[in-house]
Length: 304
Image 1 (cartoon, rainbow, N blue to C red):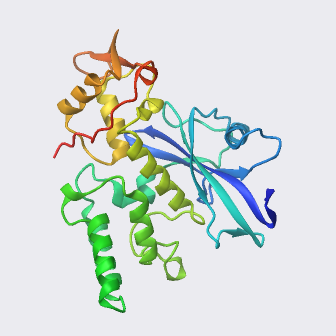
Image 2: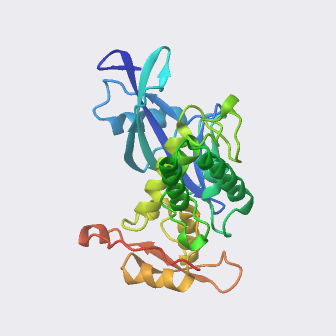
Image 3: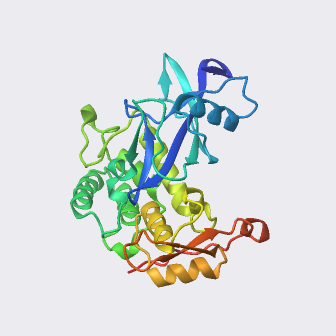
């Protein structure tokens, strides 16, 4: 790994590589539950060039959309006795789960690691129930009333009792709250998780939560979702991918009016017979919309 500032620190690049298949957001995972990561070398002109280079070398996947997420540099991030500063990236892969050149790389459902984030079929009652009980115990364990009130406020914002108050963008805040309360394996005693959810190495589940939060916010003001779509698609396919990322159901007709009203897509002359019924119209993303104007931010039209 490349030295950073002094001999007691190192820098690496971590990639949250996301695709959508079978109506589920999938993230590329190494066998030891790590995100793909590697050193930044001085031979690379930029950090992003370094990221793309070693991902292509290791997996034979040529990344499409890439953006920098955050720099993770907590004091307890250490390896070989040195502090590790990790620069996280979000990368999107079009067309589902790509085969890699390594048998030990897999695509894992994001909601296997963050099961409390999937509200498409309503609140995941079993998981949320366990979370509320664990957070209540943590709240009541506060030493004074001011701390207890502050904890109660955080709980009510991040895990509200009513589904209508659920803010899908607070993925990172929810993960950090669960970590602070000691309810997940990465923070729990003897690494024993109190709530369901597959743990990841080091703080890589936190990096995944950061990426999911960024994606959920970004699909509302920039058409980044189209970086996951094939060249031609039905509006139902587009809706399914948006719902998979947001973890919410959206109102079908309002969603279609929103997409078409913003001029994001255009009809093609092709129809799809894959629906099993009447052939569906295929659409294409109008990439020139990015040059014409900035897409106005809007909330997703939820189904309820």
